[in-house]
Structures are given as C-alpha cells and as structure tokens.
Image 1: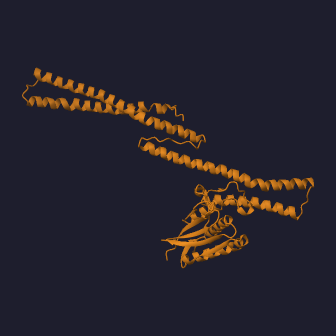
Image 2: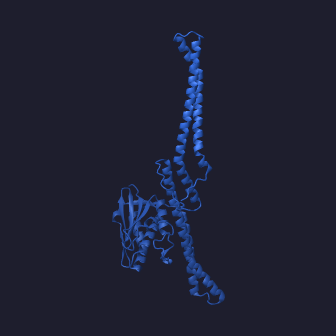
Image 3: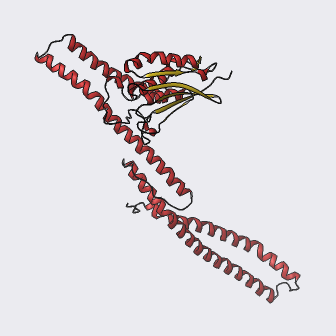
Length: 375
C-alpha cells in the first residue's frame, strides 16, 4: 500500500503548529515584559528606598539598571528556550499524527474512486485518530456491502428480465415471419411473460416504497390467534398440493392483541410461510407458533427443510439475495424480495424480524417480534 504524502497541507502541519505556539509564546513574553516594565521598576524602587538607599544615589540607579537588565535577559532567554521546546514538541506531535492523517487521506481518495475494499490499517495511537480509523473502516465495509448488493441486484434483474423478453421477442419474430399464428397457446405464453414482467415491476416498486418508509399503514387492534389462523388458511391449499404439513399452534396467543395493519402483517406471514414451503421437501412440516416475551409477541415460522448456511444468515433480508445463486427462479419462486418487504413492514410496525438455522439440511426458523397492546 502506497501512502506517499502529496498534500501540502499535511506537509505544513509542523510549521502551522510551531507558528501557533510561537504566537502564543511571543504574546505571553510581550505581555510579561510590558507588565514587568510598568509595574516592576516602581515597586523595586520603593523597596530600595525602604531599605535605606538615598533618592537618586548612584547605588540606587545602578541597582535598578541591573534589575532591569536581568529581567529582560531572563525574559529573552526564557522566550528562546520556550520557542525551542515548542518547536521540538510540535515536530514530534506532527510526526506522530501526520502518518495516520496521510493514511486516512489516501484511503478516503481510494474510496471516492470506487475502491470499496480499501481499509485503514491499525493506527495504534490510542487517540481519537484510532477511533476515526475504525469508523472509516466500518463505513467502507458498509459501502462495499451496498456495492455488492447493487451488482447482485443488477445481475438478478438482468436474469429476471432475460427470459420473458426473449420469449416475447421470439413470438414477435415468429408472428412477423408467419411461422406461427396468434392462437390460444401463443396468447397464453405472451400473457404469462407479460404478467411476469408486470409482477417484477410491482415487486421493485413495493420494496422501494417499503424501504423508503412510504408504506401507508391502517392500524387496528387484532387478536393474534385470528391473524395466525387466517395466515394458515391462506396457505393451506398450497401446502396440500406440495404434500407439506402445516401446523398452526396459537394456544400461547389466547387473549392477546396487537395493533397492526392486518393486510400488511398478513403479507409478512404469507411471505414467511411461502418461503418455508419453497425450502421444505414433500413430507416435511412447517409450524406457525407464537411465544410471549414481556410486552412483545414472537410469531415463529419453523420448518425442517433445507436450512440456511451461517454465512447467508446476515444477508437474507437484502433485496434480491439468494442463498443459492445457482438456482434460477421460476414463476412460483418470486423475485427474491419477499423477505426484504417483510422486514420493511415489520420495521414500520415498530417490530423486528430475524432468521435462525443450525445449518444446511437442519431446517430454519423465522421470528417476527411485535409489540403487544397493554390490556
């Protein structure tokens, strides 16, 4: 890593520190000299008269001249020594902080050029500069993550758009060349791909609205048991077709209510149950249950399906994130933003959502935590 100092401001740090201290020292010395010149001689003169020296005697004049010369000599030597000490301290201080500042400047420039992997090495000065370096590295790591998400999102969008556009283009060319006719089969294929493009556009708009806080919530008190029962009924048929068992255990929710937008929270549970169904093989089981924790309720979706690797857990709620990049999304898998929307909706309700999994092949658990209404 090259951190050569090319900033004149950084190189002039020593001179600026020295100049600042010199101004303070000179001002102090001038003030001291002025006070000593105005106040010192009259006081010294009075003390000499009180000691028995005659007014205007040669001895008195000689003593006062010696006092004045000694005072100015002392002030002059003190000023020179102070300036020398200030210069040494300024040089050592500038040398100590110039390298970290140079490194930070270099890192900031690299980051501004899009090199998001840039990091500031450990400064080791145990000062605010070290704290600044840690904060810079944290910011750089977040920007690197955002950039990685952006690149993945663009790649996924290209992947999502490629199939329907290719299908529409192929049918358009075939219709134009007379190879095929606009019959029921071609109409169905074109409508299906158009709907896929429409759904993708709607999903992108939905996640943008959610993350930007533009969700319009219609809050109302609702019993948790009703919310869970409705979510189970909405998904029952899909689970039956996939031969996956769905169990709803709402006993712990008896008598408890929450203030929510029932459609939005229903959307969260639908997303979680759909996600669990997608990753649970035939014959498996998904359980929707709940547990109270002080003034909060945990809505829990647990499955015994494919599980999630530990390195994927922190990224599950990022838009378009796929734990298995090699798996293409078919029409029933959605556009990969269901969990992102679920998190945004949960956040808008003042709650949290998190995922847990012992590992691949060991199932997974999603927990939505929402505040209860105090009865």
